[in-house]
Amino acid sequence: MSDEQDVVRYEVGDGVAVITLNRPERRNMWTALMEHEFYAALDRATGDAEVRAIVVTGAGTSFVPGLDPAVLDEVRDGKRYATNRRPQTYATTVPKPIIGAINGACAGIGLAQALNFDLRFAVRGAKFSTAFAKRGLPAEDATAWVLSRLVGPARAFDLLVSGRVFLAEEAFEMGLVQKLSEPGEVVADAVAYARELACHVSPVAMAMMKSQVWRDSEATLEQARVRAQYLLTIAKAQPDFQEGVRSLVEKRPPRFAPYSRLEF
Image (cartoon, rainbow, N blue to C red):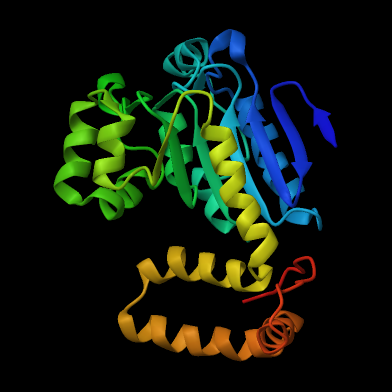
């Protein structure tokens, strides 16, 4: 099924939601409307029982090369970008895995969004840049925090202060990108990976592990251990645990029920 909105497309198949940023005539440059509709699409995928994993990509040959210059110019003149804005780290709170299919230029706010996905696949030759320093801005939201943990403090500092363009191949070598795809294949590669998760992995386990990966970075080793024990107690009380063990004993693929949001 599909539902086309103004600047974001939402499609679901085989347990995977594909969210497409859709302003190809402007190379998918970011606007407040796109941000609003993107977050609405994430909310929709969160509540969609059919969806177990999410892929985010851009229409055409670009992902998001940054904030639309027209919007930047308005902000420069003192106009507010948006009111009641959600943080750019919002994707980290979605209890389903998000894979970025970076199909082209990814810079500024586009990179800030992509860094908050759980995995990033990129087409070979795609251009990346933080860009903030060249606009007289600091690293937005938690970009410096996430980038430092992905590539190390020194490399993060270089990418941030220089604002230089670097290619997907370098991003892969640094650990910012997890898979390189051939031209025209990045969405298919990301969807194939997402389908494997949707078909074979417990939705409860994925939600808990995503929470652990993102939240444990803020905790001490002991705090992470204690929280893991707490999550283990919750997980053992869920149907997914029963099905996971039963499928192992019966030597068959697991048949997990749709994800029901848990409070943990």
